[in-house]
Length: 141
Image (cartoon, rainbow, N blue to C red; front, side, top):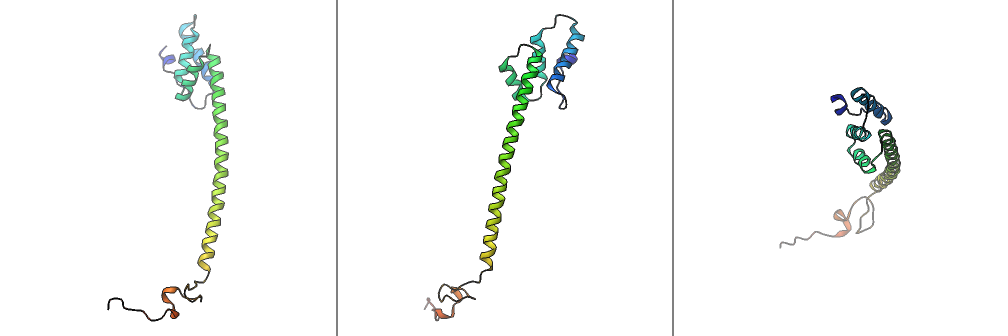
């Protein structure tokens, strides 16, 4: 009986196998008059995912086999949602990589262009160092 109360679902076990294990332990413990509501409660409590537990409590399955079927559907739906999100994320990542490559190329081209003076328009120096600028004034005097 204690084994039945403390049963937990392992990761590699399907919901149907878990339901079957609970049912087998119940047959060994009670021999007859197995209460389906109690089995459903043990099934729900033995699940690892608290969201799935809440979903099953809301669904209120009639017996343990219905609970296992509902749990399978929930898990399938969850996996499908994860796959669609993952593929959408992959597309976004590829777009961002392309944008980064474009910006990197633009930066590289800008750095390779010779610097042009904004005062005289000649290349090779910048306005601060321009010879056409004239003498520097000492504003302190």
